[in-house]
Structure formats: C-alpha cells, structure tokens
Length: 266
Image (cartoon, rainbow, N blue to C red; front, side, top):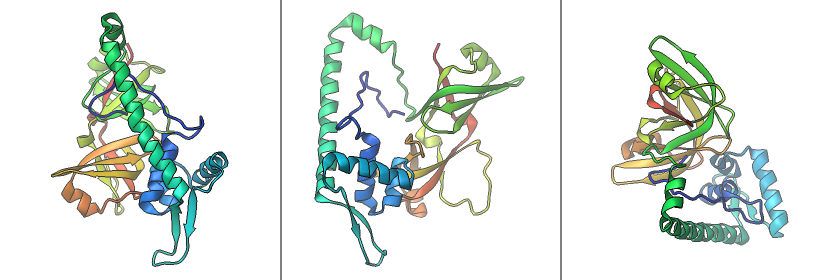
C-alpha cells in the first residue's frame, strides 16, 4: 500500500540484514503504549512472535532493548531501554537519509529520458491510499456484476471486489493474475464494537490501530493487519474522539465490495 504520491524507486531498509520496518514498528509501539501485547498487534506480530523477534534482535545488539515495569496503577508493563530508544532513533534517522538518497537517484533518472519513460510505464499512480497486493483467487461472473476475490500476498485473507461484468471482461480477469485492490481511505468505516450486530460489508478486516494522525477536521488512522499489511482510514476528528481511538486498540476496517477497484497486470 502507498500513499498520495508513489515514488519510482523503493528500497527496503534493514539493519544487520534482519531488523526491518516491521520490527521497528514494534519498538515504536512499545514506546507509545508501554505494552508488548499492544505493540505486537500494532506491528502485526503474535505475542510470542514479538518476543522471539526481540530476543533475536538482542542477540545482535548484545544489549537488552526492553525493560519490565512492575507495579503502578496499570499493573506494570514494558518500556524501551536506553539502547532500545537509541536504536529506534537511529532507524528513524536512517529512514530520512534513505528517502533523500532515493530521491537523489530519481532526480538522476529524470535526466535520462529513455530510461525515465521505460521505468514510469512500470509504475501505477493513484489517489487511493490503500493498495492491497495479491493474486486473483476466484471470479464469480453474473449477468451484470462480477465478484472477484483477491488473495493478499502477506496476509491469510481475501479482499472482495465487485465490478460490472463488462469491465471484468474488458480487463480479462482470470484466476492466478497479479492484482491490486484499490480502496480510498474515505471508503473505510472503522468499528470497535459490533454490539451483537452484523454488517453487510463483504470486507471486514480485523486490525490494530498503529497511528493516529490528527488534522484540523479529520484524522488519518493507520491500522495493521496480522501479517503486517497496513490499512489507512480517513475519519472525522469527532469520530476519533467518539471511538476513543488509541494506538494498540483493536478495530475492524470495513468497506463494501463495490467501494474497491480492481487493477490487474495486462
């Protein structure tokens, strides 16, 4: 998934070949919540998985990254050690430096007209903040409407996309194709308590709130799926306050099948 602009170059940053963005999402979640359980959900780990990745990281750094807090009104918790804080700060600095490096290379590519035109044909730019990558799992054709299931690459779940049958035929949709399910952030409804009700929305993704970016009128809510894929929802500030959305909180991202657009590699 990408946001408003889509850079031509991407690079995965890893420390010691093993510590990636998901691991540092875990550290950031710990710094924000003081709870390993909540931080694990933020980063898309199980509780056991979070412990294992922290132990592996500590074997690399030869220093504890996490300290336990006992007692207090919350019954204790966890916090980053000074070494953990320093590692997280270094990661954030490296992210900024990497982004500057990639931008510099994109600037160079722009001076090479043939290469620039070739590479840009390989990219897709869209205002949809959510781009779920996967493969077409099934195609259910009807007289006027076709329902396509896209199996996500990183998560053991599907996204349902509804489109007209004529559009599906024009795209040549078939099982096994590489596909993107595109969903605008404004199309996503967040639910924190179903209160015994069931929704008609075909897509209901159980997530964990990872970040709340508050604006003047609305907020962008970044959520994480169990496999680490992120979802972005745009909701009003009143809704954020009404739901009392906080980092580490479980929430379900819901959207109709017709709210998703399908893109397949032609």
